[in-house]
Length: 64
Image (cartoon, rainbow, N blue to C red; front, side, top):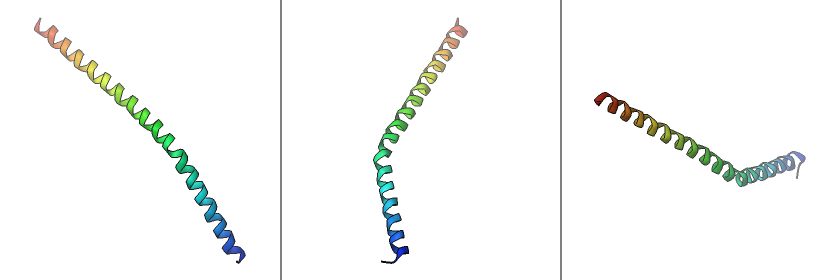
């Protein structure tokens, strides 16, 4: 095998190993991202409920 061919094969091998390693770690980052998204969704819900409550209070004050 020529030197350049073995060099290319070795670097393809290293790239494959690196991709496998990244795939093994990737699910952990996806779980963390889903947790962050769910926490922001929760805060959006809280803000929405507070704004609705304020609107109801304003309507009650206007009726009185």
